[in-house]
Image 1 (cartoon, rainbow, N blue to C red):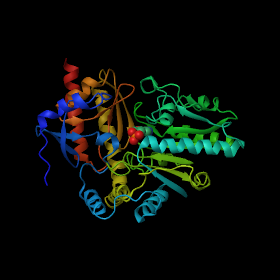
Image 2 (spheres, rainbow, N blue to C red):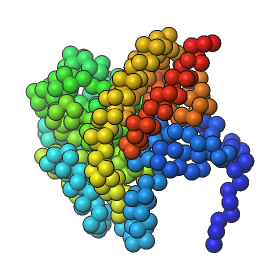
Image 3 (cartoon, rainbow, N blue to C red):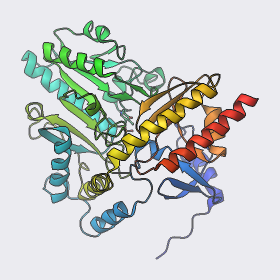
Image 4 (cartoon, rainbow, N blue to C red):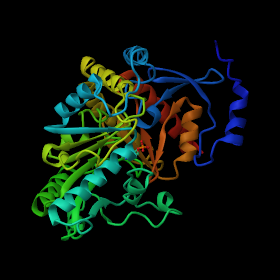
Length: 407
Ligand SMILES: *Cc1c(COP(=O)(O)O)cnc(C)c1O
């Protein structure tokens, strides 16, 4: 039986009446997507440089991805982790190939991946101190974003995230990103881990410098701390390497991932190096939905396309050229744009004023982008975006900036 067509004029009213008001949504109802394009309910087309906040790695409805989900949905969708399934084993193998010798745990979101990392740090603290509760400190960075559950939120030192929800999980301390001394000053006997986004996303697109990452690695080695990287947003090819930390060549102990992993199907995962992965023993952690045959089929399709279409190389090369183009905008409109940050397809445009009017103007001109902290606009095209797509976005940005400069 066919479902009756959704009455489009009604959608805004339905949201008003029935959906919780915890988001400032754009006044836009999207009904269809294909590649880098999405369409609203009036038939208007937009260039989607949000990718559903870095999720739709292959763009919308990539045929390989759609077919993988269709096929798996007709075969086996969910069995729980009481049993094995070939897809989960194969996906773990492929992720380990990228991350290094170790093991993977599957879950359903970024914050859940990070909860796993926080729990891993607690277990490492026990191994280190011989006692539960004595070595629990995790040092994170100011302006970080690690998610909305209690662990992730406690690791996220932003008033707008934490307000109303205290008391938080104890044991988190915060250093200045890219200031090694500020991290070193926080390390003590009771410290278990350092936990960082390789490139901060929500807080403004701010990368860790290579020098800082190497310094943190050394600090972790000196004090027997885990170096845990949140690659939920910047990982999975977004910057032109499979993980963003690979640009620096640094070694990490554990990685949290999610957003782009299954290309739009909800999925998270954490990887830990072998000697840390064994801290999780039967019964110590779990997830009912984690790593279902369907989620893994979607993720395997993403990895297949990334490899087959050589997307890492393309994102890397296109990203370098695009950033140069965008830096032109800083030169042309210094009173509107302060700087361009990030790399690959994770780019921040640091504005001189609040982003919302710019986001609205871009939307009017046919380009969807994401707000970020520090007056930044985030540009997160899908990994399949070509030079032509990037050029179109740059042209729209230029026209919007020229308009703003004129008023
Ligand atoms: C989005 C994000 C999260 C949270 O992911 P959810 O899937 O929304 O729980 C955590 N860390 C980073 C770096 C993110 O960008």
